[in-house]
Length: 283
Image (cartoon, rainbow, N blue to C red):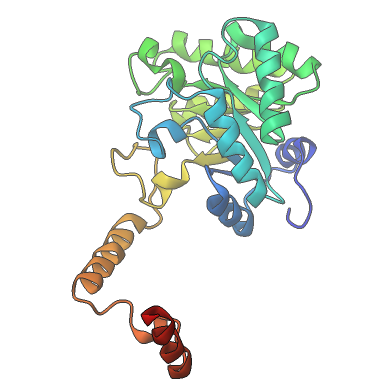
């Protein structure tokens, strides 16, 4: 699905065609470009940027202004993937009206194609209102990082039958509210499969097992660029951080030893121009 802009209709069709959806995060223009070139379906500008690129302890401190700033940069790099803008904490929690306004800001000022928000049954009316306002919504259930403290921390959800049923209810509520897809995070693999079968919209997993409709990972986790912790559900496809540090160390050593820049990295000036400059300076 390359060469044309991916839409929510393409995302929905992927489930019907039994084609797995590929989703990654990006927080700036270079990573947006790379995601585009890699041919992924969906790029999420997640509020995880609070931890990954801003150095915060969680996502709660991320603001609308932060999100709009980063979404703009990613959109410039993404020509084909569907770009999802994450609604930060308290941008949709206080009232439906404020939720619609802020969702509109992410699209109008940031330029993303759709928005994402966390919550199931409790936020289904908000999702429905945003969708009715003409803004496509992706849901997010299971482990919801913005309210992780209320869930007992960053841990697996849906361990017992009652808790698992509650997450199934969340998924159905989001579908009924008009969400075009949803992310489900940190649940047992069998529950991920149950939820994917329980709804007709794509269920994209992160730590939800293989039998969902697609997968999403934080790119910085996947490439070994974020070193604070590595979630159980992350596979690191490369380790780019040590390579970058080694390059910086080599640069530091060459500057210190006066071997960089060499002449091939420098601009030259003719002897005649240099001599004329010397005379001008002496006047």
